[in-house]
Image 1 (cartoon, rainbow, N blue to C red):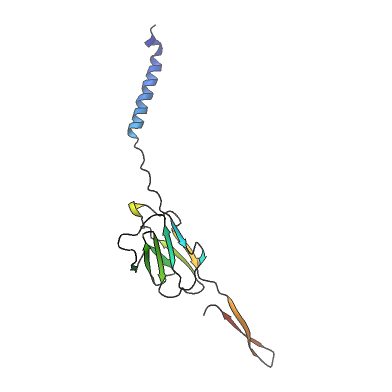
Image 2: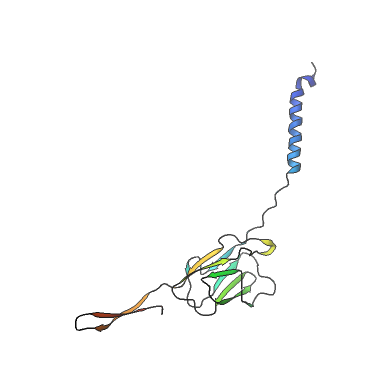
Amino acid sequence: MNWLDKNKWFLLAVLFLLINAWGVFRLHSPAEAPAAALFASFEPGEGGVIESNAALAWTFSEPVAEPGTTGRDLAAGPVRIQPPVPGYFRWTDARRLEFHPASDWPDCNAFTASFADAFRGPGGKELAPPLSFSFRTPPLRLVSARQANFTADRRVTLRLEFNST
């Protein structure tokens, strides 16, 4: 019995393994690496309190603004604010977007600012979560309480003043 007869099944198994390995590596195309995510930080911070007519601001991890848009007031931006507040957006530089309300923020309200689903950075990079940010104006607060009236039948009327009209 020669060497080939003794090892034919072993050689057949090795040949089968090599052909399969070659087929797998040949057909397998390396997956494209996903574009690195784009990050945004939010001011006044998630759940933060914003005062009177302060601006909202998002700072991105890399330049996002299209050339020629920095320093200009834009009626619409990539962010939707709920409940709606009139105002304008402005790219202060290629990495920072601000929203300026047209007048003071409504008192005692909670808001949500959400990026549009279609918003992409350079090269089609998607924005990393979170895509929505919540913030609020200062809560209702008692400023003063004083007696306004006292009747003969001992009924008291109090005048309460709050921080909101």
